[in-house]
Amino acid sequence: MEKGLTLPQDCQDFVHSLKMRSKYAVFLVFVVIVFVFIEKENKIISRVSDKLKQIPQAVADANSTDPALILAENASLLSLSELDSAFSQLQSRLRNLSLQLGVEPAVEAAGEEEEEQRKEEEPPRPAVAGPRRHVLLMATTRTGSSFVGEFFNQQGNIFYLFEPLWHIERTVSFEPGGANAAGSALVYRDVLKQLFLCDLYVLEHFITPLPEDHLTQFMFRRGSSRSLCEDPVCTPFVKKVFEKYHCKNRRCGPLNVTLAAEACRRKEHMALKAVRIRQLEFLQPLAEDPRLDLRVIQLVRDPRAVLASRMVAFAGKYKTWKKWLDDEGQDGLREEEVQRLRGNCESIRLSAELGLRQPAWLRGRYMLVRYEDVARGPLQKAREMYHFAGIPLTPQVEDWIQKNTQAAHDGSGIYSTQKNSSEQFEKWRFSMPFKLAQVVQAACGPAMRLFGYKLARDAAALTNRSVSLLEERGTFWVT
Image (cartoon, rainbow, N blue to C red; front, side, top):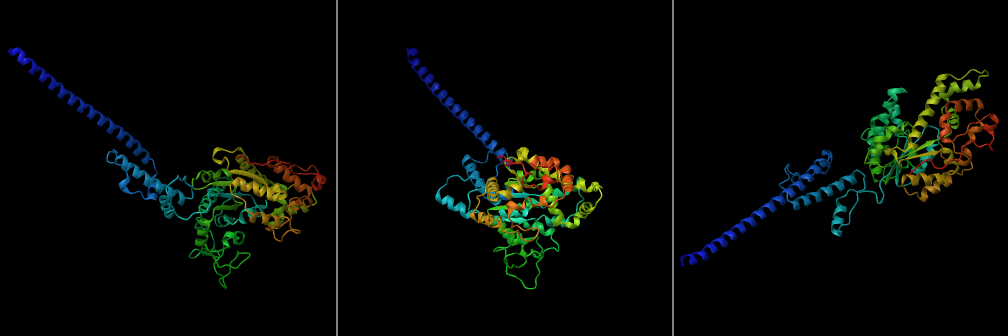
């Protein structure tokens, strides 16, 4: 009887023991799950922390990130909701920074209230959907660059500068060749970069005499840059103040560099003409700078025509050539003169070959244009250049081209941009002695073959209009 009474009590103890063990098991499973979840959360936050640590300090400083949003080293102090909030604020600041640097961010769809708030926080920017382009017209003297530069100068939404590097050449002297040539190229490149970023103050270090209170009367060829002669950059005229390079169509006070820099930032695009950039490879840092969207248009011309034009425009520098031409004897030209000519042609050829190879850093950013093609079809070439640059061509530019390329008589002055372009580009053939053409052809043969300029066999071929000295070529650029 006693055993029968004890059996149920044992069962009860057994069942109670099972229940207690089950509770402990469930608790242990729950604890394990919690630890697994915490471990995964820590790993996620740790990876995000590592990514955030890779952000350059300069960017963090520029965004003025709140210290409260910076993750702790073990990343265990922030919850996922706090991390999401940090990301949202950081993304907003990065968007503002990209706008300040001139880079168009990818804007996601947002609510109307959020969109309005974002617009109020953003600095002013051009009212266009496309990115800001930076166009460099790269040429040498007497290749028609002043004329082609007007294609960009005449468009109202482009801030155009005419030969700003002239000031650097006048201030910093480098001997040609070797390390000195490389040194000058680096100086030109660094100044060019700042100008594309609308830091026009960099020019003040090279303008003589030095500007006072950011005012100068000595900006080279100011009148050839419409952006420097229009409101609000054109300040009221000041009597008895002499400005060496004044505006053409209106009277303005001395150039206010601050107003010019502000106008540059307000324009949708930036273009610049330079005949002092010779080595294309030095432009790689500009092409790779995320703040710039660089497009390089290299303008070339028949070297025979270039020399003929330079001998007229810069007569003092070519006295040796003229003396040689006037000499009845057959003595050759001094070798140093020929070597200088050959070096110029080779420099242009090497830069063009690099551009046409389209290395990765230059792919889609380089276009080669022959002046002769522009002269024969200016409107067509203008459209091609604008298409390459990714900028819509306005009727304003088209009207200017129509009016200034069909003039009955060429404009006066060596820098005139008013001419009958279809007749102008071959005038050199009828004034150049054949023996001078022979020297150029011997020194510049490789460059002439690359650009499609035919050699003249004799004096009769040189002056015969029915004999073309220009090979028909398609466009010289690849996208």
